[in-house]
Length: 80
Image (cartoon, rainbow, N blue to C red; front, side):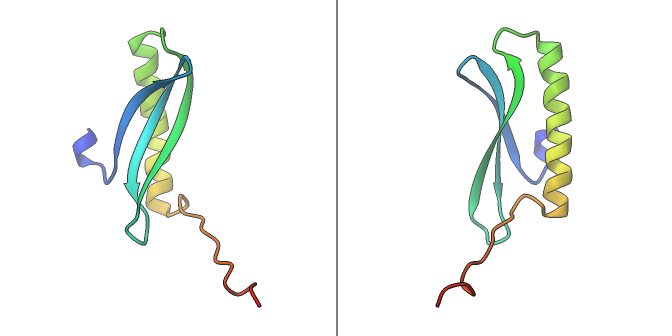
């Protein structure tokens, strides 16, 4: 499933919780990373973790396609 997506992701552990780390390129071609928590502890079951990760990846994929991930605001017009 990972190979057919336009981004890569891994499951990482941090401070006793599981996270999904997405690696993608924004509109300008810069590499970005986004950490999304699963709210599951490190010692949770594989089945629960897989189900939660699939939901998070589907939501991220939808945001990636709509372009709502990069909400960079240009402040050049505000400078004097």
